[in-house]
Image (cartoon, rainbow, N blue to C red; front, side):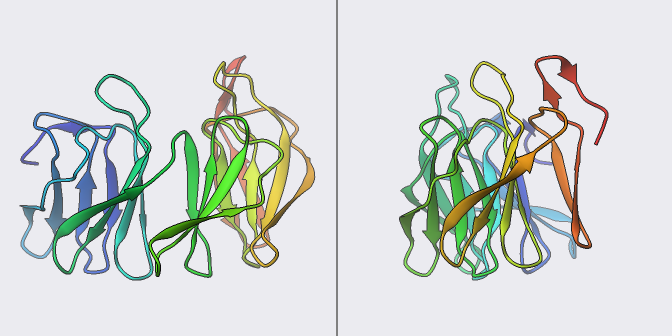
Length: 217
């Protein structure tokens, strides 16, 4: 790579190139993509907000990439959003949120759940480049996990608060009426876990809690 970086985001684009943005880097405001056909790195127009540590990137159905949140070099939360347009190789900035989890829904919108209480959730509408409010979950938190189910609903598994205390309550978001409902409790409290949608089931594994790193599911 032309730059050393860590805690960046990577996204496979519709042309099979891989977009790299943000993170801890040698030079500021860098963004580039890897072209597998020529095995070369190509620099894009610079991202607007430099030093996006631990941001999240989602490929939208229109081929653009939504990059949200992250921290600054001073470890302050960054509440802006940037959108990369592959067709013109440029970035634009819009409003955003912090300490959040995001996921792409089947109706092409993006669900954003803010991670610090009070819990709140919003929908990003790509067609109008706007945010609208939606129903809030009972709990949100840091390092929560969202999983889109085959029926389009979204499973939210527990997360931790800013002190690392974890919850066990799970909820489901219905995109049709834009409401959350509780479905039960995990056997073990956890955060930073990984969820896999397998057939009609969701496998929830690993993560950590106040007792340390987990190796169960």
